[in-house]
Amino acid sequence: MAIAPQGAPPGTPPDVSPVPLYPHNRVRRHLSELFRLSVPVVIARLGILIMAVVDTIIVGNYDSASLAYLNIAHAPFTSLMVTGIGLLTGVMILTSHSVGRDNLREAGQIWRACFPYALLIGVVFMILTWQSNWLFIVSGLSDDITFHSTRLAMILSIGMPAAMIYITCAFFLEGLQRPLPGMIMMISANVINLALDYTLVYGAFGFPELGAEGAAWTSTVIRWFMALCMLTYLLCMRGHADYGIRDGFSNWWRHSRNARHMGYAAGASQGMETGAFTAMQLFAGRLGVIAAASYGITMTMLALMFMVALGLASATSVRVGIAYGRRDRADMALAGWIGLLTTMAVMLVLSLPIYFFPGQVAQLFSQDTTVIAMTAGLLILMPIIFPTDGGQNAAISALRGAGDKWVPTILHLVSYLCIMIPAGYYLTFVRGMGVAGLFWGIVIASLVAVSGLAIRFRIVSNRPIAAYQQ
Image 1 (cartoon, helix red, strand yellow):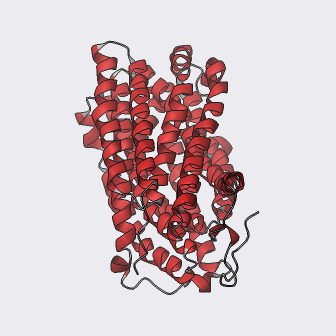
Image 2 (image 1 turned 180 degrees about the horizontal axis):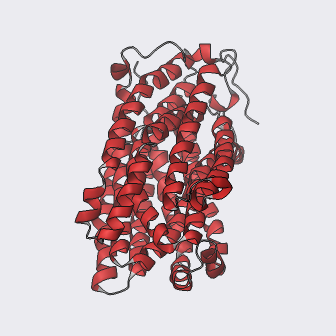
Image 3 (image 1 turned 90 degrees about the vertical axis):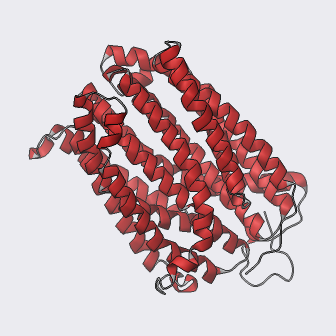
């Protein structure tokens, strides 16, 4: 158990105090804090994808073509939403730095400055998602897929501002090491989503049968529900006055400068990665409805497990950020390596049931025997993809927590735009591997990414940390 050092200010949290511990105690402390923080975050992150999984299962069992339309419509929406998550990453990281310095007012000002910025991002990305039609056309999709996917993308776009509001509030609370409200909110949202999804897709209980549109409307309604509930909690939470939560948003653009600049690199990085995966989804769409459905199911499983990695990575970023905020380089390095190795180990374990039972997993999402057979052949690659993809996210989160901005972005550019897309295209269309070629492209890119980012963290963690400047 960590103990605050003698002479520390009253109320200093034990886990943010520079405590001299023996190596095995330091490791045990970091593992304990990593899982204490990450478990609620993992549940909250999983909740985001569980809603998508429920959509996929319900729509996939309703109609394979509708599943293909919904998967393609989600591609631009998800790409922009994840870019927005990256742009707002500075909220969590800078909040954790403030916690490391025991400066609660500064932490609150970060949220107040970034909330209007999140709204601005949400409105801009809503407009871009609404205009997805051109992307489907230039990607060479059929008129039928383009028409239905465009309509679904328009419905999804309405929930984009809500997604950014929720993310900003959740990141702030996670930076404070208070992730439980986000977890509780996500569990509640999933219960509502399950009931509403079934009702609107199949037309149960006297409601109209909307098919894939019902799933899209459900997602949008749920996102606004979550955003408003989380915002209400933040404004009314115990201790809100200590953080100055209700002190207004004056000069928000100037006060959000550091968070924005940190987010530009993270947003570019995550935008490039998800944009690359969007390209792969569109490649699958060119192969036809069956390939698009199989790719979508496999990517849903990958994304679902990736949320476990994302929760561990977020906790890693906070742990590294707190050590960085108090200028403890050795503890910062230890937090980062424990986060990276733990994430890869957890992801490997999670991949094993999917590897051994691919057919049974595929049957959860579709009754189409052709889709099941193709999906089962893709799922056996997960023991390679899960650890490497999860590991690169943990490594880049550790680098963000340590204040590293643009080098991780360049590494993502090389891995996902310069390697994954060309490799996926070559293997799929030139070598004739079909949709399996797309996933071998992901394997290659993830291996390059995790290796490069781990080397970069070793370099960064061996540097002295500069003194904090107000």
